[in-house]
Amino acid sequence: MLRKTRTASQLQDEVSRRIHRAPEVVEDGVKIRVPRPQLQEPDASGCNWTMKHFGNAIGFERTVDAALKDVQKEYNLSEDTKDLNSLFGDLPEG
Image 1 (cartoon, rainbow, N blue to C red):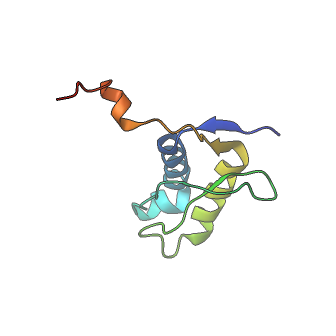
Image 2: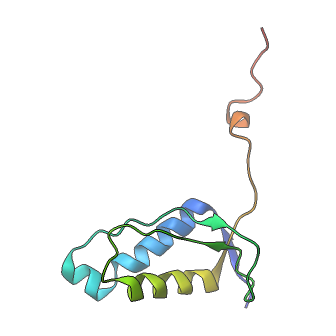
């Protein structure tokens, strides 16, 4: 299956959404901090990103891992990096 490409923010939001809709997370009312995805060399499945160091996830490791793996199966991280300075155009010199 070909993966769709998403930005780091979109992947972070999707993993967070899936974790926080899990019944055991909803029931406990816990807020798990989801880190930014990190680009990596594609693994054996072709996934080019990972996430490490989820916050406040003790006791929910299986839920977090399942959500992460599901999103990794569907999406790859966009490798397009935009120069932040270009958001403002070229600044005049002097």
